[in-house]
Image 1 (tube, rainbow over the protein chains, first blue to last red):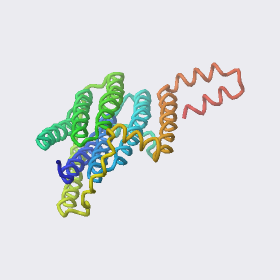
Image 2 (tube, each protein chain N blue to C red; image 1 turned 90 degrees about the horizontal axis):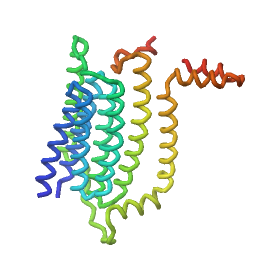
Image 3 (cartoon, each protein chain N blue to C red; image 1 turned 90 degrees about the vertical axis):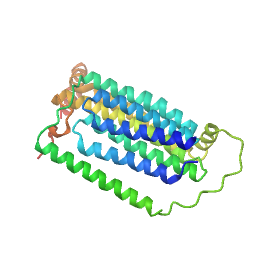
Image 4 (cartoon, helix red, strand yellow; image 1 turned 180 degrees about the vertical axis):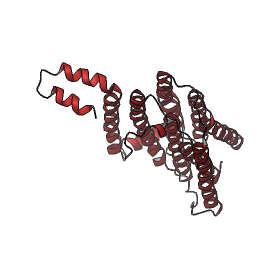
Amino acid sequence: MIPLSWLLALSATLFCIGVVGVLVRRNALIIFMSIELMLNAANLAFVAFARHLHSVDGQVIVFFVMTVAAAEVAVGLAIIVNMFRLRETVFVDEINLLKG
Amino acid sequence: MITVLFVAFAAILVVSSLLVILHRSPVASAIFLVLAFCSLAVIYLLLKAEFIGLVQIVVYAGAIMVLFLFVIMYLNLGRDVESGVTIALRRGLGWLLGAVLLAEGVLFLRHGAALGPEAPPPLDPGLGNTQQVGLLLYSRYLFPFEITSMLLLVAMIGAVVIARGRRARVEAGEAAAAGPAGPAAAGEEDA
């Protein structure tokens, strides 16, 4: 039996890695992957609590999170492709079209 | 045994997700992300969430990562160049903030903040995990489930419209120029 606190610690670590990825990298694709890592950290916490409470509801929520993640990736990658067409770059600090 | 497996796959998960954000080549990052998702799927299996574990492999490691790799190869990206004072400064700040966030979480867990006692195991209804998820999904969560289909439809249309690009839209506008709204609509979409 894996203790709940271990699972939550793993989830927190995964989330922090995702946060660092978003803050540190300039490549929009890597930032997207980091967002996926954070979503997965949340999913892990959901599954951990679902087991802790002996309830399946948490796993159903994870299913919905995965759907949202898939939708987000589809739209986000389309935006990145379009951005690359316009500016020939995927680095977020070189995209300053809306800068005042 | 389960604990040993958990520790091993948790280590793989942490190392591979660190490599995702550290590696300079986007393709390598994507491959490490697949590894991370697969080890997370094993952890789900260890937690007796078989359905979620397999969906994790099919949807995340399969569909989403194929989309990522497709875009990376379509854009033909090389290794990222990351040098300069501003970038180094921002990198240091990013790691610092991440460490502070992690320390906060660990502190929270150390004080055992209200995790609550483990619920008593329910009377075994004799159902498998997938059956339980399915029963819940089509009864209590039926409305969110239907909303999900709308979300996917909107995302699909949005992705097609956005990724089609300006030139295709202008051409479509010229083709429709016989109609009075054709050129105006194409002009609007230039913005």
